[in-house]
Image (cartoon, rainbow, N blue to C red; front, side):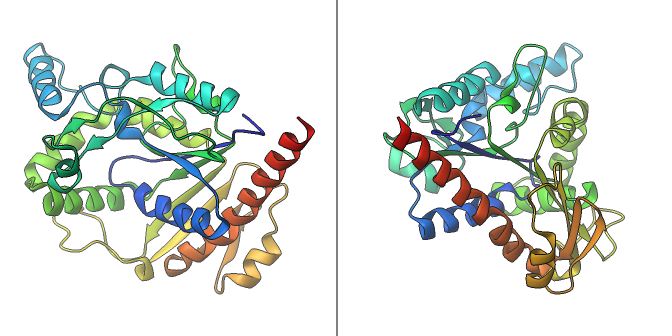
Length: 294
């Protein structure tokens, strides 16, 4: 953790909704005139799309049907840890971009599913913002989770997460329901061992809970809307959180436990703004004071 070079990490599984949370932070950074270095977790996958397909096929032929983007062999965990370590210490580091589709790939003259070259992060940034699968990952070899000053988990209930993933992959990536289902099944061991444990290390978790029937996510025609959901917000350490203020500002919210706020899904963006903005103010004040003392 760093006073001069803070790190914020948003972590969640594929289809969890981390990108939506990232947009909230972008709004806050723009409003508060904060220069952030943005890093996407996909940049630290080990293989491009074609290589990953070949690797999955080879692993399956060898009897390993659980090789996935969620586990260490398919990722560059040491490089991600090194990025966080160097940024926390010096405000520098290297990353790249994974080009998901034609629109992202066209400006680089590359094929979708490939990586851009590694590059240094922009100079003189105020903080690093990570969004991806492994912001709080820890194994016997690496501990990425030790570096972020604010760790946020995005964890919809599992059936909703699967519904969101199925609809996203079908609409934006052209996959069939059967193909997405196969991916979910293949990833399950790594999901249990490397994704789920992260949410005990996060500082705040946002869990969307639909109040409509999601009992069979593989036939769901629509993604439940925010207004058809509640959001459970769990603070690992509730000290310093002004719950009376949040309850007064977020109508129809309530406390389910001493460290847990529940609000209507339609108020999730407001809740994030109210919770994160004071935290970012505090980071920036501490940073200015530390720089001034230096």
